Amino acid sequence: MRKGQKQYQKDAQHERDERRARQEAGKEAKSASPMEDLAAISGAISEYTELMKGAGTLSEAPKGEAKPKGPAARQGATTAPSSVLRGFPEVDLLIASPAQKFLLVGCRTKKKCHVYPQDSQAQFAHSGKELQTKGFQSVDAAVREALGLDKDGRVEIYSAAFAPADDFLVVTERNSDTVLGFSLNAKGEMRCAWRCKLPDRRLVSLLPPWGLMGHDTLVCRVDTNAEVELIQYSGGQLTSLKQKFKIGNAASWAQVDNELAVAGSFLHEPRLTKLVPNAAHQSVAIEPVYTVADKTRALALAIVRKGSPSFNTRHYFICFNELGMGLVYDVDSLQSSNACEVVARFEDADYAGYDAANPVRLITAVAGKSYHETLLIGLIRGPRITVYRVKDVSEPKVERVTDLFNVQEGDAVYQATFVQSGLGIATCGLKDERHVRLFSLPS
Image (cartoon, rainbow, N blue to C red):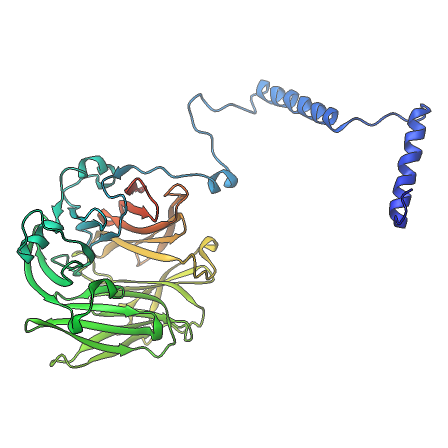
């Protein structure tokens, strides 16, 4: 025995020595090696399988038919796109208009930005190859014309946003540091309505994330101190108005037209508000609409407004919190009650937990027809997207439509949006070499 062994080690060694002595004396049969045990088990399984096949209890899947995958296989699975829209090696902008009429794709390095009308494509998610050469309007060409440049003039579309009714587009152009507003027709053709420099000689590249209110107001959202800034076009110039939410830093935002939702890092309760500039454009008021009485940290927020799309009659406020629970509030229920009615809820532990480096994002789309709308909700984290569908809010039924695994093949999803009112999803990655991926969704 080795020096310093503990008593249980000495006892085990003594027992092994005695067993070896009995086996050598022929008083005890030798135990099988691990490989012999494995061979015996494998043979037994084969015999059992053949026996079950003979009894008709076990059948093989027909040749060429996919066998169902277990959870472990799904975790490592990759969902293949229905088609790929190439030509944008570094997609900086991937924006679906609120009413789902248009998809904007922009690449700063290639100085290329296109608007794709979705109504003209019966199966938009399957049309990536065709969309490379036709079926789009060039935003760059419209900006060059508005700035008085020739066809070879260099322009760089830095950011963009659509109006809620999909009838107006505002873009920022980096080389000239100009903000431009364009009216849109059904084909996505653009006509410049106004253009202007930012106040105080600011650079468009330094603007925080922003959305559009009406046709002439940029709503900028600053996480630090939960500040909101309105940059309004009036009288041939842009002016700035600022206001703050007293909630600490902002943890999550959502904005549609003049409605703004925010949840704070200090005060976690998600709140839906309305932005009301005064008539003289000298100040902006933040009017509360509804505050959710829940102190759980909100990971993602979304707003669905009436009239966007045009058939939509629903007004929703959607919150997804760090416990992995999503709640859909009916804002119109405030007309008859002091609290928003929860019309649907869903839970997903895969998206629970706060992670600043890997945040949860939430996208929405509305399908169907007036008073019989279907709400689609997409959760995004890392390389994965999960889609839920809420049918008929009079008797709400939430179903998990699909899980898209590893959609960027090892890369995280940088941007994603529904296309064609939830018939598909468009995605791009941080390092994606295959441009914009289009996925069709189960109906």
